Amino acid sequence: MDLKSELLKSIWYAFTSLDVEKCGKVSKSQLKVLSYNLYTVLNIPHDPVALEEHFQDDDEGPVSNHGYMPYLNKYILDKVKEGMFDKEKFDDLCWMMTSKKNFNMAAQRLSERDCFKLFCLFNLLSEDRYPLVMIPEEVEYLLKKICTAMNQEWDGKPLDALICLDPTGQDEGLSIWSFLEHMSEGHLLRVTNAEAFSLALDEVFLEMYHNVLKRGYMWKKGHVRRNWTERWFVLKPSSIEYYVCEDLKDKRGQVKLDKNCVVEPVSDRDGKRCMFCVKTHNKTFEMSASDQRQKVEWIQAVQTALRLQTEGKSSLHHELKLKRRRQREHSRSARSSCSSQSSQSDDSNYQETEKGKERQDLEIESIIQHARELEIRRREQEEKERRKQREVQLDLERQLKEAEMLRDSMKAEMQERAKEAEQQKKRIAELELTQQKLEAALNMEIQARLEEERARTGAAEVAAGRRRKEEAIQAPPGAAGPAESQPSAAGSV
Image (cartoon, rainbow, N blue to C red; front, side):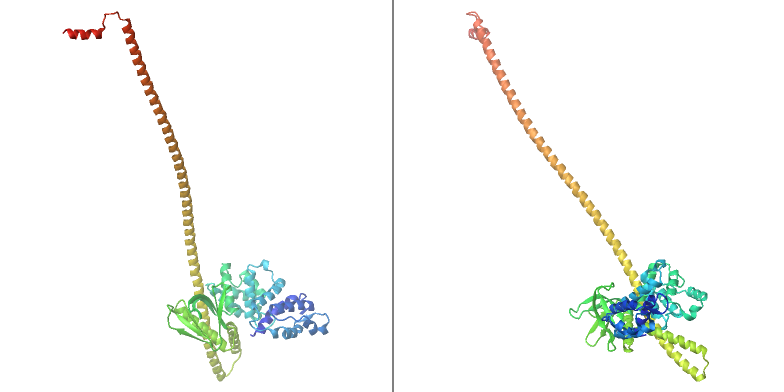
């Protein structure tokens, strides 16, 4: 299916959403708005008078889908080139226009984003006839892909039960609105964890809608500094893009693939192992995978991309869809026809060829599936490591907080002790000053008492001398006192 056919599917939904009366025709004023939006989202220079000139003979009457197609092909689709616009934004515009008229998002259990992704995958797998439907075989294929991405075993009973209740779905297929309603109600797939379903749907959406053959972290050798840097790689049929991390916000470069490119293993060196390289016409890109299995898977995936480039195909899943369709047609023709032995031999040879191709496709799908499983395990391991690091970080933050609290408490205690020591120092100084004052007062008291004692002794001596004098004056002449009689007695002897 070429690019024009892909775009027409979404445009068909946008056109029918404008057909309010369900008569197959839309007014020219509405078609002007639709055309202007298509010009904008497809990055095509807008021609405001082209629509009027194209339908100038129709007056202002409504235009049918078949009447709009020549204008659409000439002025819009023929000017579109792959890579000049964002296809997801284009499909989002058409989804927004048709979902408002045909789908009640408020009553659905699925998120609007998940419904949009299912809408895109439905268009990818739907039959190339209008109105667009998806046959049960393709529904089963999509549901199996989602179950595998969820690490959940596929259970076909809900789909079989739905087909039994509505046998017309087996032959005519499901419309997008029936498909979304059954998915939301759990009639096709039992979903116990909405978050796991969204993650699985995103994996399938990237693989099938964005043609991502493989993605993951690898080490890449630089061309200027020649150093090794870890990058997040995304492999598509036409390129290998690499980013700083898996959020895809900071793109660091890409390797453009063509039929002349070569991928081959490289011997270990520079301290790196599990190496391989992709050679273009002017550069050689060296990469190092995480282990030997990843190395083999990356080489096989790049070889698949180069095979698609050689065959001139832009999407692996478009090719797989066409092969499934051919196999169904061949099976139906084989069941309904009864041919000769030679034709049976031709059929057997054709079947063998188809089986060989089918085995090859199954191998490719198994590689992609295994890569997805490894990616899921890697993400789970990274999530465990993140949780562990978060716990360690929280524990370190708690210890740091406790250490800060202890430091603050010790600081406060030291300040309190310093304050107490300062107060104690002041008290000691006051006591020393008081002691000095008391010692000075005591010395003064002692000095005063000594002086008083000397004064008392001097007064006593003066009083004693005065008494002696008085006694000497009062004594009769010739009478000698006891002191005078002693020498005379001594002299007589």
